[in-house]
Amino acid sequence: MMTKEEKAKALLEKYAAGEATPAERQHVDTWYASQEHREFPIGAAQKAAIGAAIFQELQREMQQSQEAGFIHLQKWYNVAKAAAILLLVAGTAVLLWPAAGGQGGTAGLAAVRTTASQKKNIVLADGSKISLGPSSCLTYPLKFSNRKRVVELNEGEAFFDIAHDESRPFTVKTTNDLETKVLGTSFRIQARAVSPVVKITVATGKVAVGNTKQVFGTLVKGQQITYDKKQERALIDYTPAPVYVNLVFEKENLLQVCSKLEYVYGIKINLKDQALGRLKCTATFNTRQAPEEIMDLLCSLHRMKFNQSDDHKTFNVYKK
Image (cartoon, rainbow, N blue to C red; front, side, top):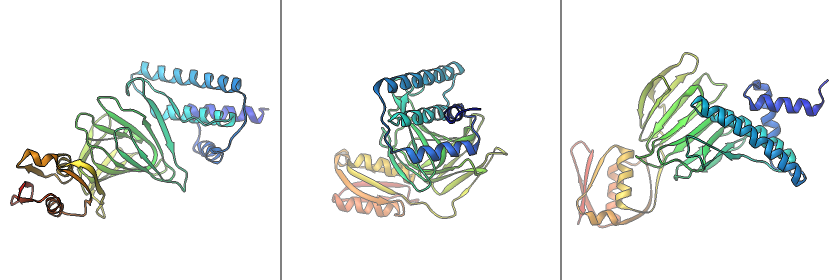
């Protein structure tokens, strides 16, 4: 008959390999959450031994991923969670581990998980902001590569406010190999394991949603996509209620402000004098406001005027 310690070790091995049942995963997650802030005394030698064993296992997993030609963050997260539990009992919790391949080789990965009563706000290295909902899990790099930005929503719901960067597309991976790709926008993803569908709702800008086989479509502000995980089909429609977000500018120059407004509203703003682009702006707007209202406020701040085209898509800004 297995001892309690042997049973616990076997369960953690199943968890790390992604072979645990939903009930077993819930048992591990619940225990982990309940013990997360406790302290346990341990000697330095024992910590070192456990750490070496964990690092060896992580290296093996990363090597297999590289040889297979892909990186599966969910399995790494399972391994790291089991490692964190072992170290937690040993006196310290670890949720950061070395990464290789797709994120530049020197950056680390962080895993953040919330309980049923928690919400967490995360600021990424590029300035992007993520609001993680209850009972959710997100894996992200501490530093992005020069070519791409990739995070993985392993479970749950999150609202993403992505910093605009045309040179580095931002990708959110979810279950069933679903990917949401953007340059800089804000959107919500609901991807719970118990739900038969994944929902992605766009608040500003536009996103492309698809998987390794195809692109299901490009969504713009006010649209959402519902992906049926079993039938592998996607339906794009309009959101039941509009989604509004704040646009916060802190001592940014007018050129940066106009660039952001152009992306969010799908408009064109022409500054008739290059010197206007260097003017500083500190303000908070909301996408509930029409672009005309925002332009009027900006011009009032800096003694400027503007006119607009008949279709309200082009704004010309000039000095009074």
